[in-house]
Length: 157
Image (cartoon, rainbow, N blue to C red):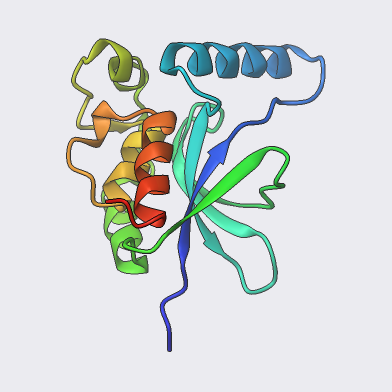
């Protein structure tokens, strides 16, 4: 049996709607993109489901921390980069260490200010970097991980 490819899923969309939560999400996404100088504001590790969609693993501000949930990942809002070096075992190892942990606001801001993360909390790109086998994942934004994953996928690393 062949190993099913995992993906780095990168959010480039904007939340729809005009409620307070939607407006806050759009502002947060815009700020993240400006500060990290790229088109992505969030990332997930996406594991394809046999019946469509993906099981997505990450730490999410909107969900309060590390979680897994099924998502469709439409191409107008998400880009997917295959992670040929990351295995289901890598994902399971990181998931076991991180599941249920709270979101790390300080660490997420620290990707820009180079402040070390809290070891008891996680943010999205830190989680994804750990699955990808990147040491010191707290140093990476979603846009940084996109560059690393794209280079690896193209065979340039």
